Length: 259
Image 1 (tube, rainbow, N blue to C red):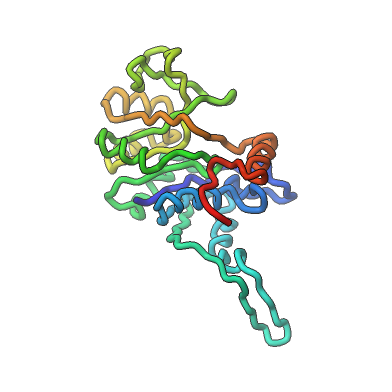
Image 2 (image 1 turned 135 degrees about the vertical axis):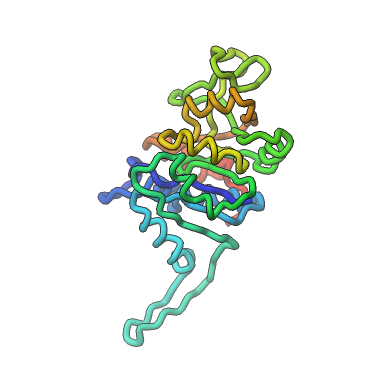
C-alpha cells in the first residue's frame, strides 16, 4: 500500500533558519520530521511514498536526490574532483515527489497524484505530525469496513477541533459532540478509490473539511479508527522542543527503529 504525505503547505515557523523552509523539513534532533514519519511507516512495512510538494518543493526534491550523501560520511578530493563515500546508509524506499502547486487545496493535491496512486487503497498522512498509530490495525479496520475513508481519531489537543461523534462511535452529519467520544482528526487516513469522486466535488476544500465529512457521513462512507496512543503535530516552537525532548531522552513513542 502506498503512503501519500501532504507536504505542500506554508513555510515552517519552527525551523531555526533565516530562509523559510517547507513545514515537513523542520527538524527533530537533526532530521526532518518528514524523515521521522517515513521511517516510522517503513518499520511497519510501508516503503512506497508519494509526497505532495508545493511550497519550496525543490527543497524536498533535493533532500531525496542527495539522500545517500546526506546520510553518509564523505571525502572530497578537490584536486581530482572525486568523492569517496564512507559508512554508506540508505533506505529501501521508493519516493515520488510530485509538484502539486503552492496554493492548491488538499483535495486538489490528491487529485493531482491519482495516477501515482493507481486503483488500490492508499494511506494519507500530514507531513508535520508524528504518532505511534498501528498502521496494520488501521488498514485492517478499513478493509473490514469497505468504506471510502477510514479516519484515525485521537484525544484532542487544545488547538484541535472536536469531531461530531455519536454515542455509537460513528461520525454524524449534525449530532452534537458526544461527551463519551471527544476526539479529533489524527491526520492519518486510509482511502479507497471511491474517495476521488468526492474529492472532485469538494476540490476547493481540505481533505477532511466539514462539508466533505458531512457528505461522507450522509452516504455512510466513513469509518473511524480510535487511536488511544501518542499523536502530536509540530506547529509551534513548544511542540518542537517537546518532540526533541522525547527523542533525545529515548522516549519518543513514534521511534520504532534502531539508530
